[in-house]
Amino acid sequence: MKKYLAELVGTFVLTLLGCGAAVALGCSDSNTAAVVGTAMAFGLAVVAMAYTIGGISGCHINPAITLGVFLSGRMNAKDCGMYMIFQVIGAVLASAVLAGIASTAGLDVANSTGANGATFGVTNALLVEIVLTALFVLVVLGATAKTNGATNNFAGLAIGLSLILIHLVGIHFTGTSVNPARSIGPAIFAQGQALTDLWVFIVGPLVGGALAAGIWKVIDE
Image (tube, rainbow, N blue to C red; front, side, top):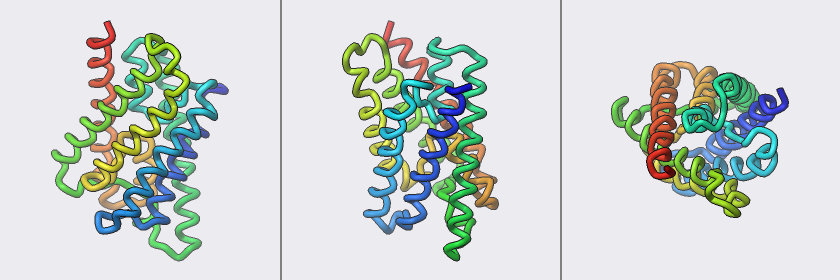
């Protein structure tokens, strides 16, 4: 249970600080500084949690990563399912806190939760999420592989920095999810189009995670 709770806490922190930064900075295409700040917030949150709970749960804090790890044969089906459940719970709790903060500050909760959207069409958004998630999960699988030897000590840093890069590319197109839990939580409170588009940010990352596992098996064997 400790590792499941660790995933809940880690996903809570990632969602609250990452989405919270997007809200606080007013992240939009017209605000380059806010885009960079939001990207850094997500990446740094991952780095912080990697060195906080990595020794307990591996710090997946993302169902797409958990799926990739499972398909790579590094965890069993029970843990895979439980990780995903607790990750979503953590993201929902964080989104509730963020929505509460936004309403207290007099902000429109629907636009103040860091929810994603298929701005350039569902097909394009799906493709972006698949590709970016595949790249991200591939970094995770490689950085944490036993064959990497001593570099495993820097896995958290490599993963966090790669997430910053992923956000710098993806924010313009989808707001960047690459993490179903991180999208489910905010969408519940944002409602409207965020809920309508939510399936894209569940299916896309999960397909990307599975694709990364397949690629890693090919290049690691």
